[in-house]
Length: 127
Image 1 (cartoon, rainbow, N blue to C red):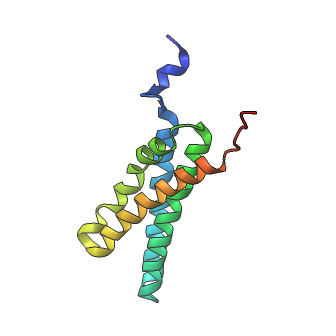
Image 2: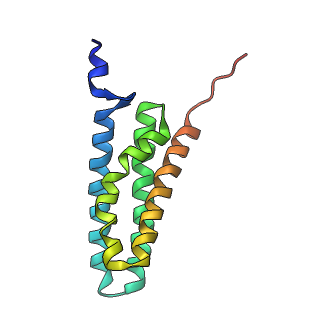
């Protein structure tokens, strides 16, 4: 048995997936805390912070995980997304349409980060 295959499930490095979920959970928690701090003085700024923070946090995490492994970018984006959705999905109950929009924005951010990681790698010429 190869030592490297012990920590791989279906070709995905389980440590990268776990680290991505943890980082997504931490970043989304910070976004939610920041939005709740800003919500008292001005309500509209907290909504902007929620949407931008959710998009950028999932984008950064999927970009970093994709660049670390250099393969299966969309798989890493999809498997690291539950760390963010663990905090975002309950907002559907409390925020209604804004919660649904946050879930959609999180998914779009993750897949955009994976695509950005794929595009940022240097291409090799065949000649």
